[in-house]
Image 1 (cartoon, rainbow, N blue to C red):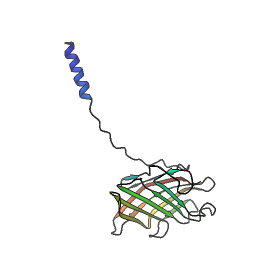
Image 2: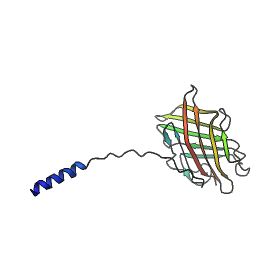
Image 3: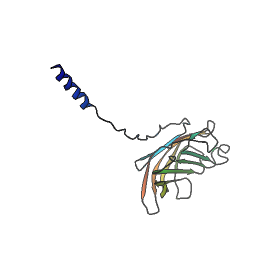
Image 4: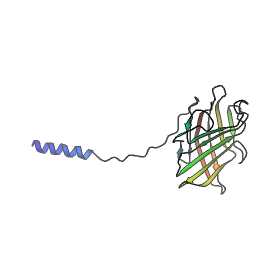
Length: 187
């Protein structure tokens, strides 16, 4: 009787055990902050783009994620923003997905900035990458994207904001940007 009870319990214990396959980790957007966290991300057509892999110091500031590149015009700090600000997001190396680029010309106040027709500033564009090659480029049109600058603090060197909108390729195909955000410390 005891042997049967043991076998019965063992059967149910083994039945309850199963091999679990690791689910691929889903990227999530970084928190929406204004502290100079050197984070950014955006949802492009349900694809969450969060830059990662390595360290980059492209603008001479503190090390940030390699896939997060910030470029400032040569007089950006001294002229209180009356110069260019550019942001690039990508995963390094990238085989499939998107890369994101945003260029804003005269960035000198908080508030809303609306895109112009390419190549005028402010401008947002995205490249779709398949098997490591750029296969399509999507550009903002006049007023098709909005960038909201939430913090522009030259003393602490923090630029933070959000962005969203629609981009179009040469054939008129559209992709959507949602919940875009950046929080950058530039000095």
